Length: 56
Image (cartoon, rainbow, N blue to C red):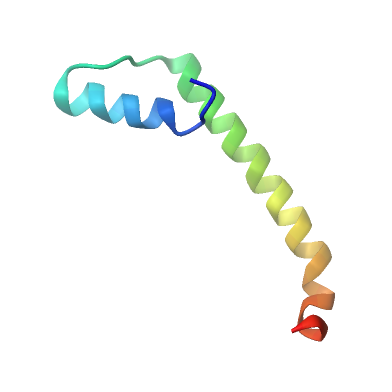
């Protein structure tokens, strides 16, 4: 359950097959981890964007 993709897969499994485990808390954890990774990615991209064309 530490994998952020697990609650999404479990939610689809619960919705379409009727089996599995669905939890709003796990889905919130998944959304939070995804948001943090997105913000870190945007920050890193903006810092390396200026010098990237010189490197390539």
